[in-house]
Length: 96
Image 1 (cartoon, rainbow, N blue to C red):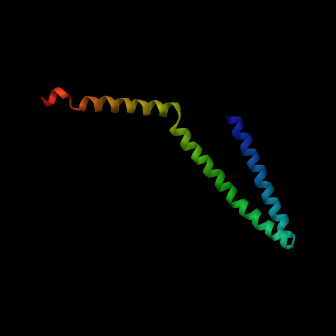
Image 2: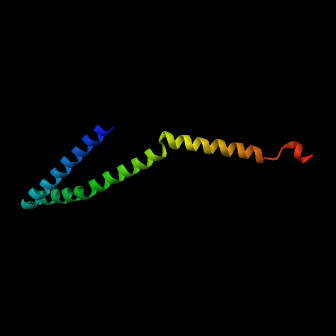
Image 3: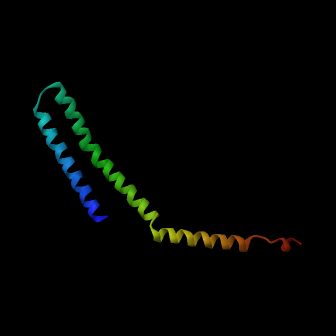
């Protein structure tokens, strides 16, 4: 898993560097097409890191909530709640 994270981070760095270089090159070119591509490169330079951060943040939250320890704790809580509910529920013999 650690190796996968490193490879993904390296790919992200390469993509961002490519976006930065393309932004500089497109800014130097003065054509209409280059200006449209420049806007797209600037937009991607801002949005891509934000999306990557958001995805990693959500992944960490989900991983924390669904880790084996968290699942065990949730099962213990459910077992505790079900035994308490059955213990506190009135029995038919109590009403007579």
